[in-house]
Length: 177
Image (cartoon, helix red, strand yellow):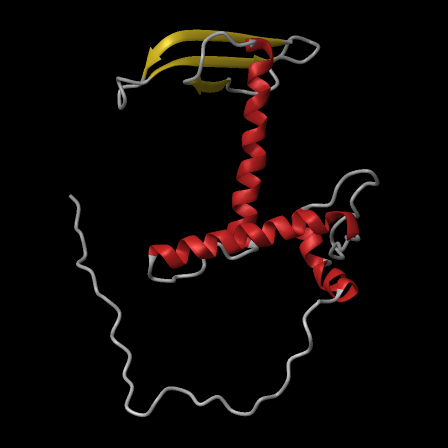
């Protein structure tokens, strides 16, 4: 059993011009006991004419989005790069998301590559992006590349003699109280 209470036209102190709805969700088991100690509080700023009985399930999609962010930060080194300029960091973010997309595209070809302390993934359940990433080297070797192998061309000429790159711009430190 699920108990849903909707408090319409609620304002938040930090943003008094934002009008929203506060939703309180309590979930009970078959014996009538609460499944969770605290209720789930949600805030909705969209239209008020919704099916509130099924609305709370959309919150579960937030979990998937948070998992993508955590995987991108921890395993794809999204926030590890310190590139210095906003444009470079935006390009890096696009590359990381493209790498994640490649893992999703490689999912049908991937085999379960689990660590010795992990259980294998149950049949019929898709692999996690981390397990696809572990098997990606095998997939990459199996697919190959359309590019020709690199040809040795000798030593690169390097920078011209006497060239000194300009120092990176320095910005003032902003102190806030």
